[in-house]
Amino acid sequence: MAASSSLRLILGSSSASRRQILAEMGYSFTLLSADIDEKEIRKEKPEELVVALAHAKADAIMEKLRDNGMMKEILDSQETTLLITADQVVVHDGVIREKPSTPEEARKFIKGYSESHAATIGSVLVTNVKSGARKEGWDKAEVYFHKIPDEVVESLIEEGDVFYVAGGLLVEHPLTSPLVEAIVGTIDSVMGLPKSLTEKLIKESLEEP
Image (tube, rainbow, N blue to C red; front, side):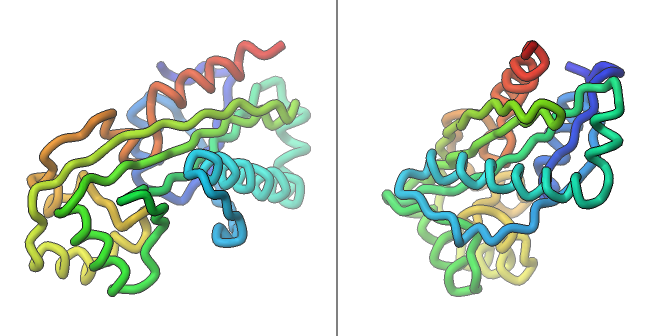
């Protein structure tokens, strides 16, 4: 679904894959990132954690909009402005994994995916910037890998992209995509922005009185 001329979207993310997915959905948007310390927010359940983090990102970006003068411009405009924030964790053997912080941690994470499947839990939050109304949801997918060779693990660590994704989990990468045995769910959900959920929340936000 393409964006209407009376809709303005802000994607509150620095993720290249989320930018790519939202563009594939036919939307044009501006980018703002939230500078929050994700480690400060802790929840036992992964679903609660990713939703809480999406709210924290939205709070930080709303503050940024007020500070940089964009909020006044949005309030004066006839357009509906929606802010999309999202978060994702990987769950492996019952343990929540965020972005790996060291090569050792990345190595442990990636090698583990050869032994048992990984699940991605991702949230989407759509905030109506003018009214403050929010619509939230989360989505889950599972990824099963064939054996991941050590040389692939080392190449991924050396390249560095694994440090910017939850659980160091890359499915679309040229080195790992041939090793994916099966995905239960959608590839866009694994990549951090489930299209159907995002579309549903945008639609619900636009239907708000």
